[in-house]
Image 1 (cartoon, rainbow, N blue to C red):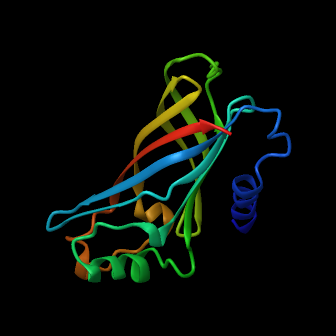
Image 2 (cartoon, rainbow, N blue to C red):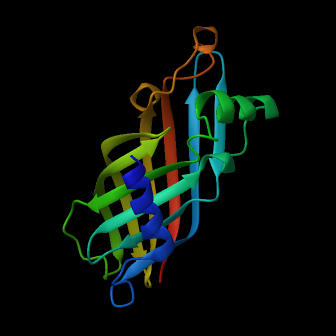
Length: 183
C-alpha cells in the first residue's frame, strides 16, 4: 500500500518522465462529493481539492484528495467524528484512485466518450481493485470528467459501531466532476 501511495505521489508531484512530449492533462478544477443516506440521517460532504493527472497516450491516470478537505457535514461534531473515528485522517490522510483507461479511444478528438477506468481505489489505507465508469467530454483541448459510483465501507475496513448503524450508511454514493487542461 505504501508503494502505491509513493507511486501516486511521484506521478502527481513530479509528473511522468516523458511528460514534456506526451499529452498530459492536469485537473484545473475538481470536486468530489459523497452521500451517506442511512435510515435516520443523511450526511453529505464535498471537497474542491481533487488533484490528478491523465496521460492520454499511455491511458494512465492518478487522482487523490485529502480527507481533511471535505466540508458540508450536518455539524462540526459530525465532521470531527468522520475524520477521527471513521476515516482516521491522521493515519490515512488521502484517498486515491490510479490505473488505466480500458477502452481504446482517441481523446485527441472532440466528443463525449464513456470509458471504464480500472485501477486501485485506496481509502482508509485499504486498496481495492475497481472498474469505475466515467464520462469524458473532450472539447477544445480540455476534458470534463464525471463519474458516479459507490463505496462499501466494509471493503475499506471502516467499521460502523452498532450505536450509529442507523445513522451511517454502509454504502456511500460518490460523485466526481473535474475539468482537465493540457499541461
